[in-house]
Image 1: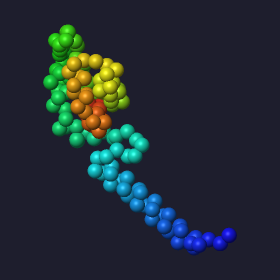
Image 2: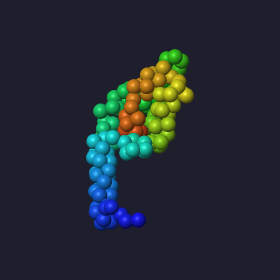
Image 3: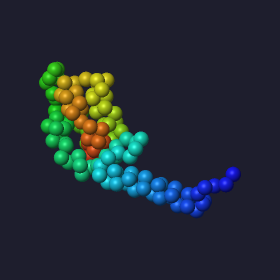
Image 4: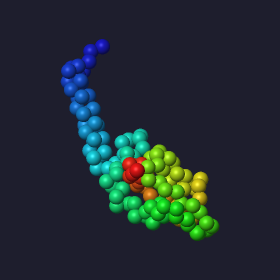
Length: 124
C-alpha cells in the first residue's frame, strides 16, 4: 500500500493542528474560560468585585443571622477553597439549605464560585 501524502507533509499538518488546538486552549484560559473538561480555576483578583455579597454576614466576627432562625454565620476567611466550592455548589443544587445562601449560590456561575473560593482561601 502506497501513502498518498508524503510522511513529512502529514506530520507537518498534524503538528500544525496540534499547535492550533493548544493555542486555542491558552487563549480561552487567558480570557477566563475554564480548560475543556476541567473545573474553573479561581482568580483572586476577579473575586474582589464579587465579595460584597459575602462580607455582610461572613465578615463580621460572631455574627448571627436571625432568619429563618438564629443561625451562627461561620467565618470563611482562610477556609479551604475546595470546601468553599463544595458548600456553594451544595447550596446551589439544594443539598444544603438556607434562604440567603440558596439565593446567593443560585446566582453564581462555576467561575464565580471558583473565584470566591480562591479569594477566601487566601485570606488569613
